[in-house]
Each structure stands twice: as C-alpha cells, then as structure tokens.
Length: 146
Image (tube, rainbow, N blue to C red; front, side, top):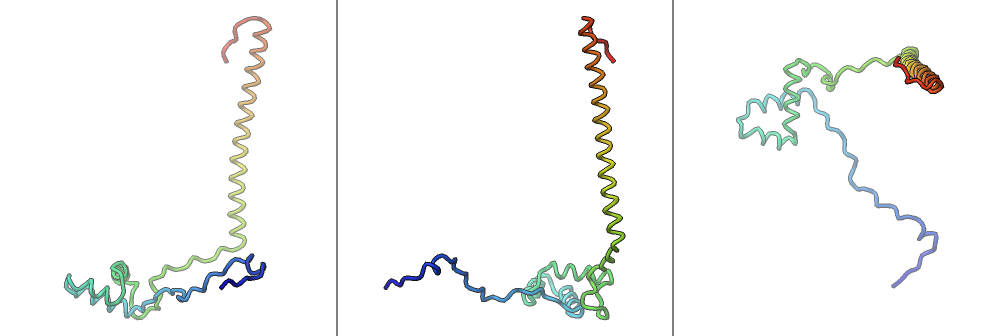
C-alpha cells in the first residue's frame, strides 16, 4: 500500500538512527594493578605471557611501558594514579606572549628590510648598466665592463 507524505517531509533529509553503542572511555589502571601485572608477566614462562595479556585485555606495549616506568622509579604504589604523566608546563603570562609575538614581528620586518635593501641595490646596478648602455649607444662604442 502506498502512503503519500507531505512535501515538507520529503524535502527534509532523514536523520540517521542514534548509535546504540556508548562512547568509549579511556581505561585507567591503578599503580598497584600495573605493578602486579608486570610482576606476574615477568615471572610467567614464555608460553604463558600471551595468555596473561589476553586474560587482562592488555597489549604488550602496556607491560613494556609500565616496566620502564617502574624501573625509572615513576611507578610506585604510594604515588597518585597518574604519576607517570609528565609535569605540565606553566602557563605563559600575557606579557610573555606579547613579547614573543613582538619578537616574531620584529624578525619578519628585519627580513623584509633586508629584501628591500637587496632589491634597491639591484635596481641601482640595473640603472647604472642601462645608463652606460645608453651612453655607449649614443657614442657607437662597445660598452665597458663594470
């Protein structure tokens, strides 16, 4: 059976159905969990290491990163959960930002000035050459080199 729709409904694009899957979230592991997995991974025989990773849903890169953090002393049970994160840089003050902007602008202007001076020098040499060619054409003599 054919059902007609109004022209307004036909002109609107159809909206896709909402995605039923929830948005994925980043997994966060506690330092205790990381240390336990590294210890278990290191003591496991070679054939069992992959089974540990599959059981925990981890990648070998996780264990490698956690081992390096532990060996560097970053990964400890007494620190916060994100102790492996690098320290944040302090925010720049408005004066510091403006100073950097002015320095970049100054460098750009200096480069433009150098180009302009070079162009003027070339124009001066071209003018001198044309004058000499004009004089030599008037005298019917071959031009001399500069």
